[in-house]
Length: 356
Image (cartoon, rainbow, N blue to C red; front, side, top):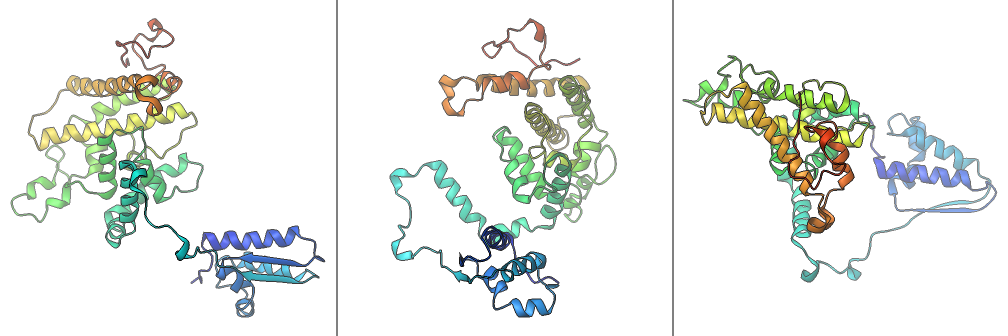
């Protein structure tokens, strides 16, 4: 088991001390001031015991060993001084002036405070949440520059401004495993029949609903989504896994315009599949035909296109407006009769998505 001095702040402090020592001539007196007690104690009062154990039980022991060797080779005096960088509470103005507070700022402050509460942290530690978060992280990892995106990055991604509010909530519920499907109904008297998919006869899960179910819905949605993606990129879109759906806004593609289209296409298509399943199973509206499902998907994409087109209006939306060039390039190659459209079609009202 590793003793944990260095979490990131300590590693940074120790690396900085090492780099300062390396950059200073060995015959010039040096004083290093730091607010990291762990780093300074590791180089002074804990050094004898750590060295006696060969730094084996010390996290980042190699960094401490190297820093110590750099210090020992110096010929001039070297001082390591701890400094208190915490501000004096007597001189801090607490609170915020009401005339500077906006609803957005207040919401963010309340949210930050709630995120520190034990109840919130307990929610993130739910078994289903941890399992789904790991799926999302692993799905996003091959397509990001990081080895594994942090949980914070995944949570932040589902609040991306490109996602619609219903899609954000849908992805949030997916990660938390909050939808009542499958085994949720197993021990509820009178509702046991809801555990299984009425079409496939297997326990119903969100993964089954979104990617495997034989009932009209998921196949009929992912097919046109794949065709649209192929028109844009030249390669068909493989049916996404549940992890890829949950992390669709965290996945980065080489072309930024394709990245934006990907997050819209995946999030909106998956949410449509979920809504259509609810209409069939919960609202008992019956089974939709392939044509009806396709028309629903096409209408959904056209609504997003229309929203993007409208949001390029700088005069109406100001700072919230979307850059016109981003919209033009993102939707290029996937529009109906695109060769007949003007170069700037954002002022046109009859622009539609077209595939096939």
